[in-house]
Structures are given as C-alpha cells and as structure tokens.
Image (cartoon, rainbow, N blue to C red):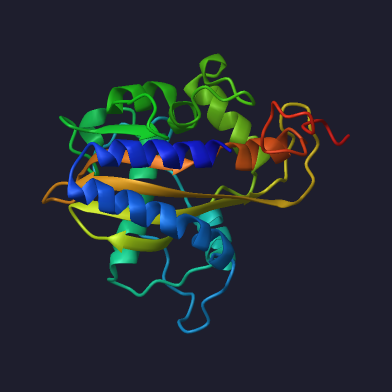
Length: 262
C-alpha cells in the first residue's frame, strides 16, 4: 500500500518537472514489479568472483569507531546475491558507488572525509519525504533518515548508535545490498535494488526465526561529472522488513488482519 502511494507521488512529482523526470518515473514504476518477480533468479552465465569495491578507505580519516572490515558481509553477499554484473559495467559501477557511500554514511563522522558526495548539493530522502543533508545523515544515521514516520519504527526515538546496534544485533551476519538493474546512466541514474538478511538475533523482544528477510526498492541518483552524488531519491516500503520483525501478518499495520502471530 505504501509503495503504491509512493509511486503515485513519483508520477505527480515527475509530471511537474522535466521530460527526463517523467521518463524516469515511468521506467521506475514499470520495472519495479517486474524486478520483484525476476530478482530471485540466479545468473549462471558469469562466475560469482568479483568482490565489492569500496573506495576512499585509506589515508587520514576520522572513523566513528575504527576502520571497518567488510569480510563477513561480503562473504554473505557473494553467496546470496542474485545478480552477477560484469566487471566495469554500469551496474557494477553503480553498485560500488552506493556501497562506498554506505560505508561513508555509516563509518565516517567528518563530512570532509566523504568523497562520494557533492557536499554543497547533497541530500537524501525516502519516498519523496523530508530531505536530509550530509550533516543530518552523520548525526541521525541512514536507518533513521530513511524510515521517517513509520508506524512500526519510531525514528525519533533512536539515536544513530541505537539504530545501528538494533539492526546489527538482529542481522548478525550483515545486511547485504545489491543492484538489480540499471535503467539510465549518469548524470541521472535510475536503478532497482535488493536488501536482505537472515534474522539471527533478537529484535525488540522478538525471538529470531532464522528466515531470510528481503526488501526491494528503486532509486534515482543524480551525480556530477566526478560521479559525486548530488541527490538520492529512494523509493521503497520499510514494512517489507518491519512487518516480519514485529511478527505481523499484514504489510498494512493499521488493517484488521494485522496482528501478532505469536
């Protein structure tokens, strides 16, 4: 329900803008549901040996705690990803750019150390909602910025550290992310994505089930000539993750059928 509403907002937004935005809106809506059905198909035509590449991790950097190690989550990613993008392809470029951005958003506490963004123009928002600057992102964290006004998650009740501890404790093997398909290249990149994890730790008193929880979405990212991100519009339904973690039956938390299965 939330995704359908978001897509309608995207159409309205695009219809007031340029031809490019209209085209991106149409493409995003058209491919989203196809992606849900197609994403679980493995790609047997290429070897699964190309590790993610996160840039800008060397040199004098002010880390939130310490320099991160992605060995565990990358192993999980390589075993469970559904796409095998060619090296040097547009898809691989986008995937590595976003993974590098995610590394910076999670682990770098000084905006001067961020190399994936254009700091003067950068913002991120989810489902055409509130825009967040790099300073907001450093303070609040990506979970809180991208899950605003959710009935099943109160972003205002969690600090950066609390939100990351919550989901790291829930998804102990990591929370891998992959690009599914890319539909336009720079400077405006439209693509679909998949996020997944094994529920292996307790979530707010709910015992883990061991199931794999998947989340699908789309994004439109604008970059400059240096491939620095200027703005990120993310489109997805957080209830894809929040509903199973709260052990509810329906993805519409206010419906009559939405109740605990315990």
